[in-house]
Amino acid sequence: QVQLVESGGGVVQTGMSLRLSCAASGLTFSNYGMHWVRQAPGKGLEWVAVISFDGSKKYFADSVKGRFTISRDNSKNTLYLQMNSLRAEDTALYYCASGWYLFDYWGQGTLVTVSS
Amino acid sequence: QSALTQPASVSGSPGQSITISCTGTSSDVGGYKYVSWYQQHPGKVPKLIIYEVSYRPSGVSNRFSGSKSGNTASLTISGLQAEDEADYYCSSYTSSSTLVFGGGTKLTVL
Image (cartoon, rainbow over all chains, first blue to last red):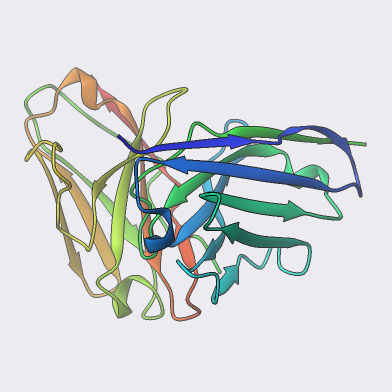
């Protein structure tokens, strides 16, 4: 079955950087667009970014534009999120999810805590 | 990229039907068929229950149905069961090629 496993979360200070990874299995990764979605503690879902199946198209939420980048390595079935200039409001559980117009498979998430 | 508008909470008794609305604009909900709905139980991962306004993924109960009129999409759950108690989120594709979620609705089964 499809498995998406995020990693790379942790506690970082304001202004620092962090790179998240999402390892995919059970699907033809190179055929799927992939998203990052986050959920702050006790809050709702917030879409963060999407990358097309071949990496040629990338789109970002206004809240992270210019600070976060999304990339993928189809040879490794892995999705990445490079997060720079982290702020307290970036504290959240970060999920990767497959799809383009929707989110059909989700990982369990990796927790990012940004402290001052 | 304003969030779509959902009621904060809805409730219903077992066996009843409830509807959750999701209001956007002509640049998202009203402009595309790409509205989807997600169910999230406490501490769990969101689960896709409706895509492209009204289609159910394999394995999702036919008690869940979706529709859209103008800039408002709706999720209806019929024959409410205790296990339906969860948070529900709508999502839509937008004219900026981005995605946007609603603020979420907490469903309580009385």
